[in-house]
Length: 477
Image (cartoon, rainbow, N blue to C red; front, side, top):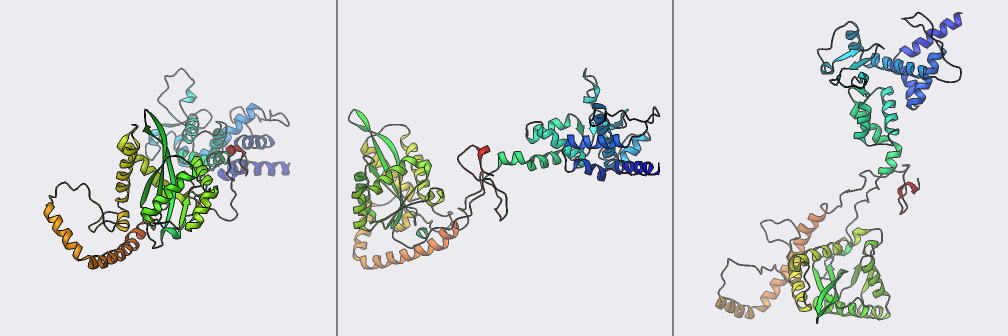
């Protein structure tokens, strides 16, 4: 008898201490398991019903009935409310309505089971009143956290808003939104489905973009097209070869009649005569430029192309397939070229001669674009290194006297040695500006933003999912 009395006292203490006891049932178990454990605990230590005076022992051995589960729910709710809202419960039991504090607008009351509820404004509904009067809870209690986790999983891992909607159909109180966001964020099933790849570390600028080389000594090559041009009464396809200087970001555009290696050699020869023979050619190897990649690889594999490049001392390199930033310079130029073409011709089909003229105009516009933020000084453009000055072909307001131009031309002819010296000085000034303005400008500004990628940095020991081309649920974990 003494042993049974001591056991009953310990059991009553274990159930009545509040949050600490409920942690034992709901902290490491799911909602259903926690309720079942609590129901078994209540069955193991029966208590008297205050209304009837009888001892409740109507539990079947080895199973939990609906009555036992309902009693476990009500017991857990009462313990939670006594633990989190002790002052509110004390006032309501004394018959005093809550008129002050953050809960004064909720119209709290105690129902027949001794549970605090919030009185809603939908009592005229034909549905049971219990749906209009949600249970008053606190979102940071372990019992409510387990309940929210149960709702989230049984809603097929729904979103935050949907989970919160299902939760508020039954309960209401502080910190529910915070807890729902936390549980959805920490759900392992949801994390697998919404996991984003780690962001690549910011790459260093390649040496080719920092070397003080002549224009197009190191350049990237890419193809745009095919484009339709008029040919007799019909049309034919042409391609635009775009060479981008890796140092000055200047571009050179040439029209290729087809995608053969011989046509590419003609285009490369035209570049060599106009801008000088390049030392290094870079081309893209990304899978999203599959056609260009295939064509350029075919060029590189042809014996005629290899012999020509070997004679001229040109080294051809492909960028790595999973490092798109290596070719970002000339890929961006292709996008600018297409945009400028749309501005000029739209969807019209023009002749080969008109396309050549338009490409010359586009090349001038691209090479005259500012490389840094515009300030009070002369802005730095690719034309500074190509021609030593910026072009202004749209000078409308200034009126120029033709006789003055002829006089200045005759004067300049007599001072060619001095002009040559000044040109060398201007070249030196350009490289100084290049280092002071352009390199400082791109030091941090061109680091790719983490759009679609995780801002977290991987650490040794992290559990990760290996990204592959298979469906997401088949990725290795």
